[in-house]
Image (cartoon, rainbow, N blue to C red; front, top):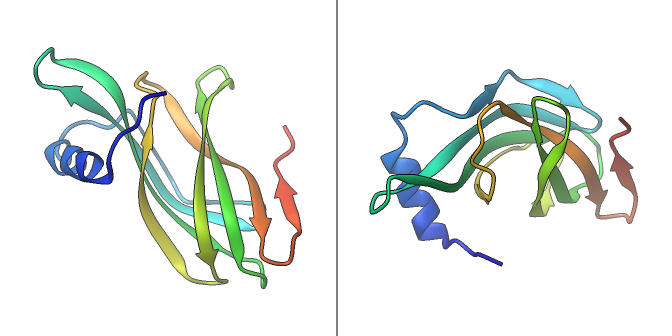
Length: 130
């Protein structure tokens, strides 16, 4: 399994800040999580000029009164197939906007981000139903 360091992701984010995104979405509510924004962009290997995965810049707000502890995002292609799931773990309190930069192995175009499931500090969970 390939891993990418936070420094590499941050550096790539800075380098690709002006580059066109693979996908960007408008804010919407999905279950207990409000997706404020999501931006998926490629990482470019400057030696070979090939795309090698990418990063997801996501901002979300937990709307449930119980803190979320694991928000699982799905990177979905234009046909509705999930290409990868990405976990964002922490303590996400109600009403607090969370902005994170996460890595993805997906480098294809026409993808979007959805909330697949959420776990909460009280042991409950929410799962998106297709």
